[in-house]
Length: 297
Image (cartoon, rainbow, N blue to C red; front, side):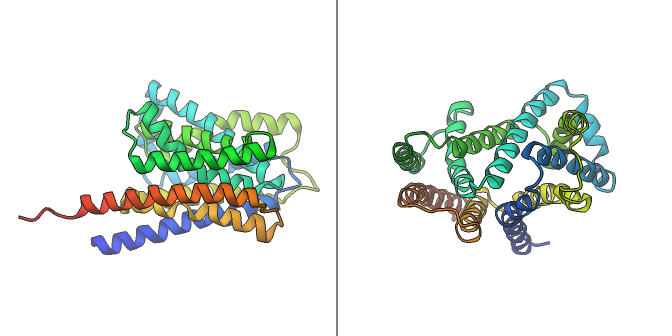
């Protein structure tokens, strides 16, 4: 596969992943709405583990998985990332089924800027001027919303921070996306299974069908595997530009499909964040393009 074909495949994978995350995921979670958010989370964990376990053998990942299990430091990091992703999933499910899709989209628009801050704080990365301007604009937008509603947008910030910290831990953990997600769901599965058994709420006549619940594993793992494939084929800057598809889809669904209000203060907040993201994304894209230009002999 030549470079152009590989890049085209990467773009298709990335767009597919972000469309699933931003478009299909909220719609799917709405279908599970009779079930409480914690029960949805537990089913999502268990069905994802089952699907990943079935894929591990044909994908020849068993040796890598056992190698990771024997690494105590890595398993400690995956335990932390498992708690973070479970918290993120639970907050997101609660937001969507509680009628707060717009707030959830705000969280994932903020997330890239949270990643920049975490990189500066924990990885000692240098903050560029465009990144600083972007974070300042986002702070102004969030501050405006906080002043208007007399409280911080905790739901949005919680989504951004938990996913940002999750990404930080996984960046530092020496493990691929597939093995990492399998082991994270394996670590969470005893708690998930125990919760469903203890509460007797795994299935009920009034709740979603078994077939619908089983799809939670597919809709969790498919976009992650597509994203992992895209990350191997695309420059990180190009991938970063595409990531805004997901929160944009969430915002459009929240407003036009589910009738959530989009007030002037929301437009102000989103406007500040979008402006900052545009500055940061264009700067990153240009920097990547400059690095890709071969030096003249």
